Image (cartoon, rainbow, N blue to C red; front, side, top):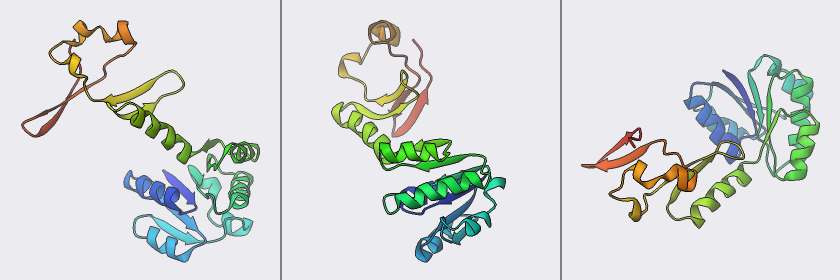
Length: 193
């Protein structure tokens, strides 16, 4: 997979590092030489350029890449919007753009972003669930009606089988996996009612 990531702030840098780790061929782009040099240590290619310059952006051949991510954040909404629009005009197959707020998200969709993400908002929502419900370790929403939740076992459940607890009937919960720590080792098993 070939990916262009524009904007190497915390979001873009973390995305570039993770995608490179997972085997993607990442071209990291930023106007800051310092950030480009930092990304050069772990991406396939790191390029210093102004993503609002159509000719410079065209030199990266976004139409030949599997994915283009515009991760420009709070520093330049205008830059984010222009870069997203240019990527689409240059024939990028799939453009994911980072939004700062709802208005920004609407404009990014209007200029052609295939997908708009709001990482701060999404993380805040996940963190709120964990902070309000102390037994919850993490949540992963899978749409509006399904959530995978990792949680600590309530003490009232100890010593009972899954079928005895009637979790699906009583709470609408399906247990996907059980993690136990035995002799210092973590073991994950599929549930046995």
